[in-house]
Image (cartoon, rainbow, N blue to C red; front, side, top):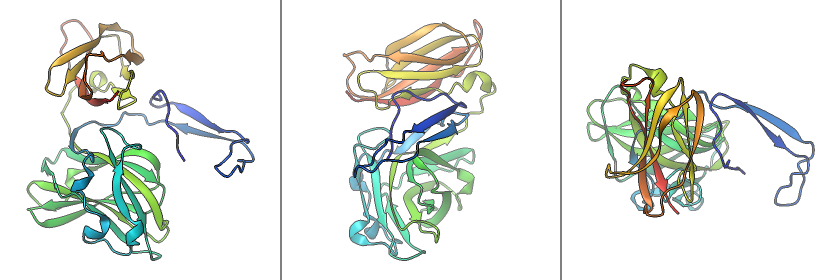
Length: 309
């Protein structure tokens, strides 16, 4: 079970999820004793980068049983399918339902026949949006180096639920030359559960830009929901009074709308975006430029969003 918020939460703040004692499951059983669960949001926004696999076309992925290296799974119950409902962006995420047949040692691999090249920049990172299931199994990313040498990289223990961007540095990928990303893998552990469901979306590379003034550049730009339907909420953080310009660009780089061009006071900002009816559905770029003083230079922050009415 999970729920999604209608508005994004602020960074670095504490919130409470209140479970009422009258809460019922699908069988009508009540929760019993109510409970408050306190949590603190992350202090920095997720990184954005260049998407190299959006998981929209599920036909380019092999079923786990056909991917090679898969072992110890129940074939009919272990599948990889398109998920149009639970996704981060675009039309689909990839949904992996897996069932291991033994207490430990199983491997479930999903092979991407596109094998996108991600380069060899030592300052870059690679990551995938992963909807976790708290299975306590291991998530791995597999790559080719020098064309055919397989490089297996530990990404994380799956100890979270919901969407999280799981990043690894390029320096953790063995081999030399340009790397090709080719598989996401779930490796079974002894304490891990034998069955679960994961979703994958927007595999990307992130390259550090070497910005000299992080106080102005680290604005934590985000849009919610994404995809945007009738309207969206754009949030960002200002460290000081600034001249703020927020524009919308088409995927071809043409400016199509301006959301704001005005001075703003420091703090967390939230702007309403009502896309023009003249804008067709598709991929757009939100470009935020923040100048701390007149005539000062700045490095724009750009994020991708989907318009899908």
